[in-house]
Image 1 (tube, helix red, strand yellow):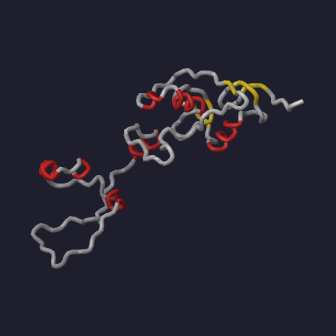
Image 2 (cartoon, helix red, strand yellow; image 1 turned 30 degrees about the vertical axis):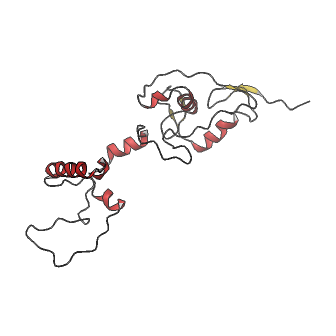
Image 3 (cartoon, one colour; image 1 turned 45 degrees about the vertical axis):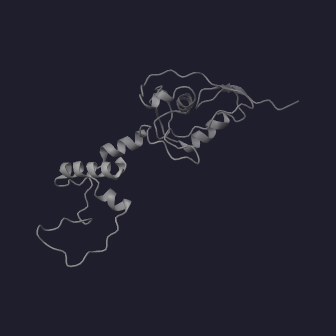
Length: 186
């Protein structure tokens, strides 16, 4: 006689069916290990283990499978469909919403994740005076210093106010249009 697994409700995703493990379905046992923090889900309001987007596993699966438009306009208090845990039927992996498909570039049109938006809102203005220090007006250079600007340098001066930027931007746009350059150039 084949071994029978207990039938009941998973305590993480609240799905019903055979549970080869004592309290959780197989997928939720790994979810519990990856996401130990408990909080209220942003979508359904259920107190459960949530990921970095503030979503429980059931809501994340619902968004991935049936409701991708929720990402663009998140609304709380939504209901969630009961999941049946069937032997041999695997649910998709519950990866964060902002994780790209393997082998493809991330989709930049999607809204930023909750953690990324909070980080940007609370970030201090960045202007490192050691990177490209302003010169004294009228002073000539005796020799050109060696400079190589990297992404790290750009991040250190990204909030710097530039004198006459609007006028220079108009000139850069005209020059880019004349030479057929993309908007990333200016």
